[in-house]
Length: 241
Image (cartoon, helix red, strand yellow):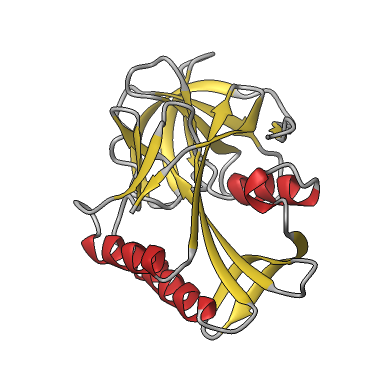
């Protein structure tokens, strides 16, 4: 049950080809239209080594903002196979899930109502706070997944102390009376049938996720459909802890 939850891109995207990544937040590309070399802001600071390979086709969004260093933002990349697209904006999953929660368009959370975006517990700020008719509270954290191989999505794509802290906090939250914790992994690509903790990248995160699963933290997965015009929330996929 997903009632067509989508985010349309507000401008036409421009095709380019990845050249290099000078730092975490900038990629250098060649525009397909005129061969010009341009810098583009990268809104996903993840490792992305399997995605951002020289020559890889990417889609850039023009940005007209006074004082901004770059006139472009990286929006999409083709998959290594070249038959589908990957979103490079790590903020989009939160916006998609906000729309889905607000419209009660996800079967995972039909018994819950959205209270607010962002909720702070201890030293961590989580993405959403929900409640049910009994007055119980659910703290939900959304994690963006871009890395995939052989139709398996992996999180994280780099060691994440912050991610481990979030999982531990959710375990503690789930021990409180009337409180639950949940993690939703959102694959920003369609070629994913299952999501797994990336033990080969961050074994400590994988152990924390397994502990959370055993402690009763809800763990869900979704994939997305990506085109040069929009990103849409897709079906549920299992998460293997």
